[in-house]
Image 1 (tube, one colour):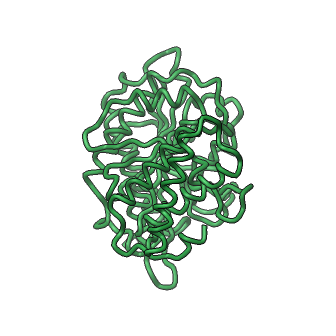
Image 2 (cartoon, one colour):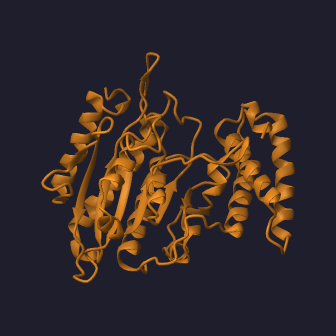
Length: 362
């Protein structure tokens, strides 16, 4: 009945109204003056945002953003693309975190701004027609400087690698030692496997070594030099298909991810030191190698039933290469690092589209 929530559609407006009503029910403050909605005047749809003021008088002017996007692909060639995992799973986590913290406002020192962005899926990514980019464009430099951390989420209820159950990818922590410490200090959650993973391992473009392809709203904040963490369970085989329905979600994993997000938000609000050493171009070779090795191990431990034989052979060879890289004492050369990126792309493709031959062209 929501017909894929295309940005600017009647169903998209219903989603926006639902999120706004939830924020009101929690007792959160509107962010845009007296309004919860921010119409995207450069494009279609609207962002929705609400504030939970911090309890520390010296830190409440600082902001931690907890974000997701509520739009999806709508109807294409007569088929509805429901977008349950992409990205209502993340909206649900954002709302649940807001609901819980609104009951305990004295638990957060910094203020928490909850935002649901529109128009993430549109082809105008990287322009101010995108909800997150429009949001940033409307902030003054002083307002931007108030943001201690943006926590973005996309695709939060999938299980893309059965051989690596419970995995939640944490990207962006390589940009600052403060963020790495924040991730490392989180309390363990039974059944949840947080896996730090370098953005360079997912943003690489197969045939364009100097190109990067951002995969979600975090890029709007990166371009504004604002620290961020990006959380995702990854692209499943239902990604951007009509089969991304509620029945495809892993609700036990969603529950564990909710607990992790709550703990991470509290850590960012109360424990994270102000980041003065943020480097948006930073990479962590050790994290990159460990992340790719984990992905390879998980896929090879329990390969998809319909994986191509030549893909499987390539992945076995890739594991030998990654192990060799890991044994090196010297940093990887440009060509070696590019090869690691290529292996990362192949294993992601093998997990999400195991029958595709493109996995072996990389």
